[in-house]
Amino acid sequence: MINIHEVLETNDMIEKDNLDVRTITLGISLLNCIDSDLDRLNEKIYNRITTVAKDLVATGKAIETEFGIPIVHKRISVTPIALIGGSACKTPEDYVTIAKTLDRAAKTVGVNFIGGYSALVSKGMTASDELLIRSIPKALACTDFVCSSVNLGSTKTGLNMDAVKLMGEIVHQAAEETKERDSIGCAKLVVFCNAPDDNPFMAGAFHGVTEADEIINVGVSGPGVMRKALESVRGADFGTLCETVKKTAFKITRVGQLVAREASNRLGIPFGIIDLSLAPTPAIGDSIADIFEEMGLQRAGAPGTTVALALLNDQVKKGGVMASCYVGGLSGAFIPVSEDQGMITAVQEGALTLEKLEAMTCVCSVGLDMIAIPGDTKETTISGIIADEMAIGMINQKTTAVRIIPVIGKGVGETVEFGGLLGYAPIMPVNQFDCSDFINRGGRIPAPIHSFKN
Image (cartoon, one colour):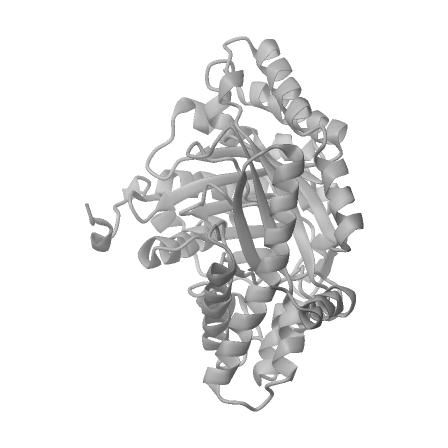
């Protein structure tokens, strides 16, 4: 039973410490929309999304009002479009028409983002995959709410280095296509290793082929709540610290479980998973970096930061799985730069570098996220950064990702403003030594030996 103390405690988390349900994400399969005629395909996609998702936003708002729990975003994810458009799309421009249809559908139902403009190419690229990938820069430039992702590798298949090389070029082209808006197109594009089928967070959400026709996934966040909880154990030993993180994560996840069940019941759509991810925002007090400082580090990036993140990530997962039978997605702690005021400060003060961030991604939930770099960074250098991060995921059997933004016309020391949840970011320096000959080898890096567990 929930007692009055726990009710009051949850109210305080919401009112004072920025606890929120970051997203209700409705996953929609588009497999039954496949058609060889492009116009019919676009019509089917639009009708399918607007029919299934017509009540999503209203339901989310009703739950917010009734329970007093902020639900920041309502989102949609769809089946990877490279799988849906293969019969009808013969050029990258054909795929762009689907991106426009997704955007139009998102605006019709009123959601904040729609994800799934995606391709899964961990072992090889089909002609359809490559067409979609080459269409990404224009698709992101001409839409407002469409998010794109590409899975480049996995522990089971290895790394598709041809696709890694291509994505370095695509990221740079996406930056060029949106250079008048500080290259914001790249903020809606993420590359993965070991991408999960049920991730509700953008830009990486897509509706995996292992999922049901429709599904409700919920993402919960509460860095401010976690920092506040750790204030009460300041100076205590690590056992006490870990127990506090775990118990707090349990409470946060229960809030998400409540919202997920309500949304599922009211929409008549099965509940999928809760993704408990401590995802920061630019708001003061809603920062992962502040948690590190509360643990005893002067700044994020100081010696001890990686182990602090490992501790946090592990205990968050342990607390989450106690609170719900269906914890999935990414779950843990995100470390984006632009979306976290404490991380921004650490970069500006020189405590946090790209290399330290890469080390931290070995133990975090995702990877190099929302990092702004000079606009003149070579495409092969971007590919090299992506390859390093994909290798961490492949070898460690975890999800890793890169969402990096070469800001055209800006260099180290300047700042880029994205607005909203995306925040702002200082341009970070990039290692200038060349990796072109390595990246240009092409081919595939085989799966690691520990992947063979059949």
